Image (spheres, rainbow, N blue to C red):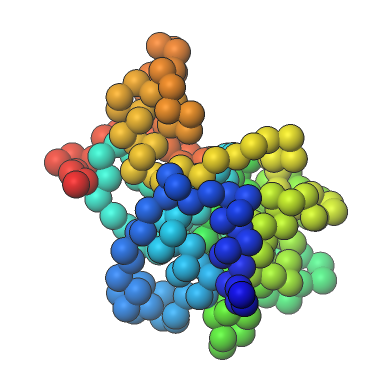
Length: 220
């Protein structure tokens, strides 16, 4: 069966059983960002939702109420990636208008995973990695988000594209709300097992730590 978004292939190595349909208001997301988002990202959100695996987090396009820490949206990391490009005065070999950089993910190594949105067809947007400890500060990959994640998990990149090494890991994708509920119950957010007392605190998405609980925030 044809798999144009690559979702089926990704699901075979990154099971979505601890994900959930994020039920994004795609019309609102398009209004906020001025464009439709890629179909593979939309399909990913309907199966996995926003969350993390192996210290890689996939972000929400719009804010949501949360019970412990902000799960992370495009907004802050897009600003960070654009600022980094401007601060470094770009990169040799890449002709990029920073306004065409749109972040969709982040790692605990402070890498920002983005799209380069110059193509009028969002399904043709390549991935742009703003790396912290990578070979180049910015690297462009001729694939979409889901294909990038698939190749990352299958160790098909040389040099390695992010600052954390997943090659010997067996990452498990966990939705952001499941992580928060586990953490509040005293459990490890990935394994779901009791965590040591010294780890009590409020751990945010990969690459972020937050210690302020949202006032009056509730999630069903």
